[in-house]
Length: 425
Image (cartoon, rainbow, N blue to C red):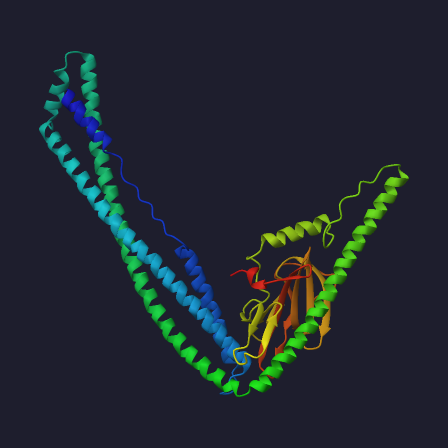
């Protein structure tokens, strides 16, 4: 009796099956795949734009910038491939370890089950089981023996189910291992292809830059002219936003005085709230500003498809290191007839034509402003309420350079931000 009880306790304690968790450091496969898809899309767009803009054998500065951007995107793509290959390598190693551990567990379970079978064979006949029960001294002992026999039968079934579950888990791990191997092999092949394309593009870029350096004088002058236009645009934007800030603060002051006058007529004392720094905002405008900030890194692009051809900040030209280019926003190369679109809900605060910048649209989002420059056929006017992704007008195409490029800026009041940090990746 005691022996049977001891065996049953041991068997029932062996039911806990191991669980496995797989963790990877850094970016997940899903994040890396999303990056790869995004970069492939940008490279495809850059290829399309280069094919469209290339009119003769000699590249223009615009095409060189596009090619340079494509090279940088391809380098990022290769990095993403390598990161995903490393993640898969960890998965493969972890999978191998899991399979080894599962096989070890399976072996133990099979040995335990074999012991159960031996025990069951010794007590397999119906007559023996009945004899074991009827040999009891009293009813209580008979009941306990019947219960032990049932528990033993259930333990056998549970052990069989546990073995089957482990076998299914091993099969799943083996399949996942094989898929990871196949995916890794495919990525290695793609990565090698991208490396070959990168070397070819770098060679082409170096050759074209060397040719353009022969025209360094005219290119320097062209860059200086564009920088002068950029300064005019900057001043126009600053003046428009400064006026918006002045009007907002004046309106807030008017309302404050009006409230103070009403309170005085009723004999009430007006509590003067501390004056806010910067631009005065209504409650609705404060909410809009908060929502705008909460969407940092998730704002849609101001064009449906495009490539950043010139990034934010100061940088020297690849062709002429004697001239430093300052970009107050980003330039986005896009396809002909592309529509510029609002990146967030807001109100059109200005629609202005500027020499060298065509039509400029400025949208206010509370204390934030977005600027869309180099437009034509604009479809909005000052005072219009616009929604996210609403079309504003067509991006102008320079027929001489065969270039369609939107200049986009983002400011918090008069403080310029890097738009790339705000747009979705």
